[in-house]
Image 1: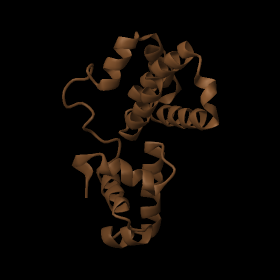
Image 2: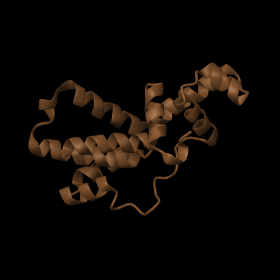
Image 3: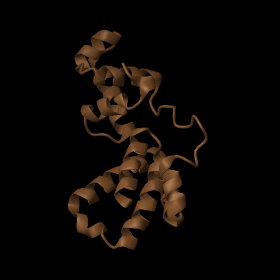
Image 4: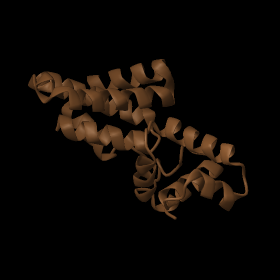
Length: 161
């Protein structure tokens, strides 16, 4: 269950919901600690959790992250599962994007496999502007690669090319 919470925390981060990601990380931390197995899964799990936490912090700031993480850590297992499944969220929430309209447009073009030069030509902007848009998208979503942008876009029906 803790591993699933970690995966869902990364999904929340990819959707631009840093608060949700932090809550899920807090809940998973409690579950990992209760099972006494977090250290047994090695550096890959630690690196993934750290990257997710860093991305969530970038979205909501240190205070927002800490507050949400503590909320997740205090949740009962049932509450954590309900939160992980989205049962505590109003219908339709989460449909928004952390990206500006132009960044969404650029992200869709990245997902189609266009280079920054090709994006610049398509949108009639400078290459440096296209570079900046891609850099901002990566930073806002906490990603390190264009492939992650493409996967994120493919999981958002409203943003698919």
